[in-house]
Image (tube, rainbow, N blue to C red; front, top):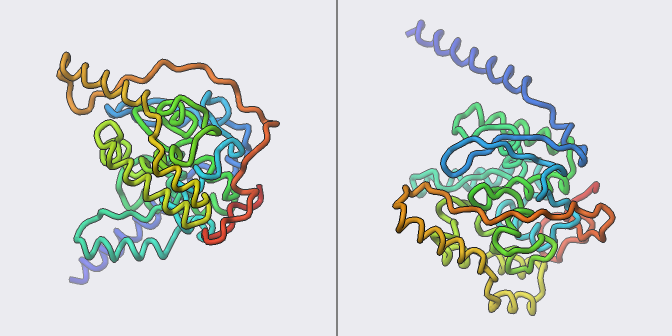
Length: 307
């Protein structure tokens, strides 16, 4: 018995050493402070193939913080990470609630990753579900909160989120679904894009579950109204507004025709629309940054600091 205990202690000790070394070898996050810097990361398409993806101004769809509507930012915060402006990378309260929920449901259905953690994972880590990867994610999130402003973290998040088949970032997503720049999005369209975030590949894939996406977008609109981000009149107008997803419908029709002709597997990608070159963001354009505004009366936390 004593031998087993000693062996167990040695294994745990070696693992801890491995974790410490792994954390020490992680790339520095300080480089992300430079808004003019672009980095190339690896993403995977819906067939599982690795693809390079540029994060930064060299990406034709890159959208600076000042060109993203406040409604889009708050739609993401209120639906994905309500305590974004209160925590320092890890939301302990959300973790406790997730554990309680999963124990009650006897499943691992609810996550508790913050926006900062998701940025850390998307930029630096793989999607493997291991304890070591989670520890790296938590460590990187903590480091980011020390080095970056909330506004910068949110800008990075909105430029790397997955919104469709090889559609990453709000700049590409807004054009892919609505044929317009992010700065032109309506509150209803902001809610629509935010509604897809939990599962754009399956659960909230608008090709397969458009009704589910629209239902969740209405929930997000209620959060925006209750938080004072939009007025009662804007809320009512958004509820009756039909999202202009004609481009999406054409993609669905094309996909169905291909299925009838080719009978592909369920993992077949929907063809991307023809890309149109867009002008580089105007650094001197009149910004609409969330971080420069006072928060709505009932929204938790100040909308960004230090920007």
